[in-house]
Length: 443
View 1 (cartoon, rainbow, N blue to C red):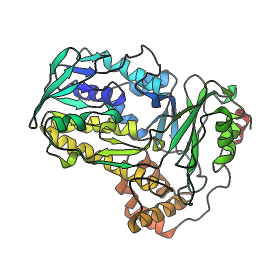
View 2 (view 1 turned 120 degrees about the horizontal axis):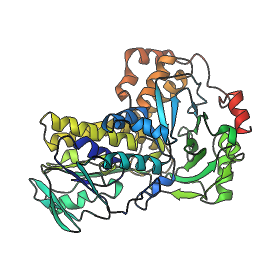
View 3 (view 1 turned 90 degrees about the horizontal axis):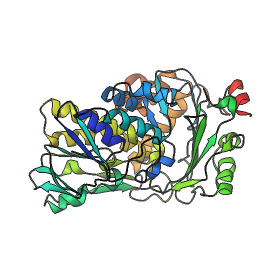
View 4 (view 1 turned 45 degrees about the vertical axis):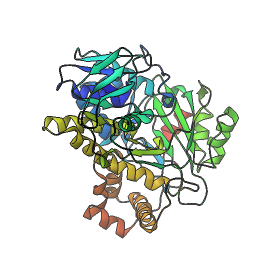
């Protein structure tokens, strides 16, 4: 039994379909028949991507997924070759082995749902919310749905930030789940554009990262190419520096409020297709199920366990890794408690990455940086500067961000030595768009 019909639910159903006779997926919303935004995923109106480490896992669980996405118009963006990104400064571009899969969230959800639902072992029940867990503090035996009790050997909660598992566990007498929340107050404002005709294919991702090194709110933004010749441009600002959700305010923010006006310059030459959509549901939130003696037969994964600030682009990929490790633990004869601990470990590195950035913005809630946190940031800053001119460091940074290698690889002896040696050249002064890209974008 899988609770939740988003990406996490679909990849979980795909991961479990070879182990169980039947996988029933319960989704409270009415599911669209095509690539449309649904009510239960309001964040779908904002920029989404799969990093290569997550995209490859999804493709292993749902064979043919990547090819299908590309056929439907998604963009495979080489990393770092097709990334125009400002970190400490503008980073150079060179061909790499990692990539981003860029598309609308609606397309991604629809492709996954269509592919997974074709398996007769998977039954998707829309407009069927799970009401409570059936069982006791020792074992979960199913859920209560709108049509009564549904028994199951395994219940997996993939409902996301709105998960009711903490409440349900308390009702079973398991105890209270400790929840960690680190909130920079980040707000999003997003608009979709039709790209200039010549820039509708083979155009890079353009990213201006917020600066947490100065005592003022962080402001940044990203442009992602997506299907049908469109750009989705999400602007973001932490508490006190939020982007307005109005057309004039959005345009001014892109041109004048972030560290470089490149996003404002690009969208000035594109055709707006939507109004401005805003959200403030961006805090880092983690339920510490690893600290409890959970009943057998129950697992939570994805945003139901660790929900990250979406600006870092890891949430969907982490969900895929969680589904993969759940399948692996069960295949090895492990218990659901062992699977839950493994799922916690999967999210620990990205949690540290996201919160390690967010805690340094002014007015953050939930944590204040200590001496060790400031030391880590100093190392991270030096690593970013060094990566400009030392490929080994740049490759390690890219691979860890793409969830293709563990965070520990940033402390590998060769990488550490290069970081200690420091940068050879300074960051680039301007965005490294090629002459051809500038021409096609109308710059």
